[in-house]
Length: 218
Image (tube, rainbow, N blue to C red):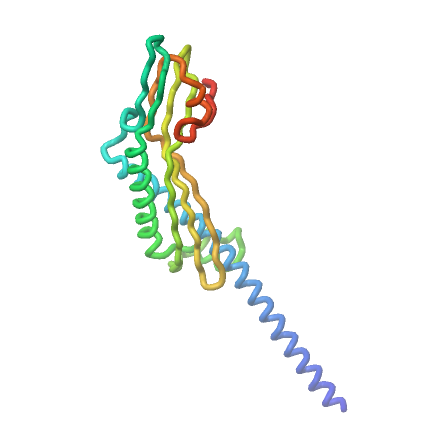
């Protein structure tokens, strides 16, 4: 009877030990995956910044002049009578920038991402330490570009009109165990012009390229 109880006790200890080991392994794997995803997200955001800067630069080619995107007309009183956006030029640059950014980011991430060995411990504080291990990830990338503009008071009866290209990148990182979604937004100045005279409120209050309200100087 005692031997039987001992065998049952031994079996129970073994079962509990195995269950505990599995639970610890699962916890370790889950923590390590979370840290790896965090490091991967940071690496991809850095790649995205570089890809977007290069893409916008190439999309604008030799540079961009304010007159390429906007036509300002004045009335006899010297004030602005109308502002017209060159939709064809704006859409062309936006499409090209989005396509280039997506291609460049896909190429940059295609070789994998270097993850420090410390990240595999699952401890955030150690995630930046150790030799780099190249991890193959499957990023699903989508890039959208649009133009926005802002008006800023620049002096007496003067307004600075700034045009930006806004790039929003949606990246889904696919690993064996989990996926992570990363959103990154960049805003790059394209051109600007100092406008003399009063500007109709319709343009100052969001009626032009999604512009916001007039921003006071300083």
